Image (cartoon, rainbow, N blue to C red):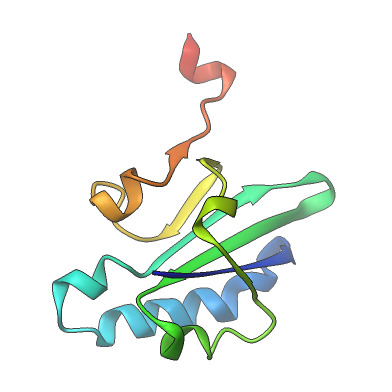
Length: 105
């Protein structure tokens, strides 16, 4: 997989969410389909870091402004899964959800 990262404020990420959704729906093969992933981690001041994972460089080319990141630089703990299958090995081998204090009660 190929990974990219970009910081957005509030809903500014939405055009890329729509793009990722379209790319994922257009992919007929179930293996690459699971390789379309969008997750985020929250930052202070309404900003979040968004990470997109796609099967190859061809797909990453349409995500302008995203900095290429190696898999080792992905956050292990995320705040949100925007696109992807949370039960797939592609997801579970890389990410887990942040647990908040309410979940511990």
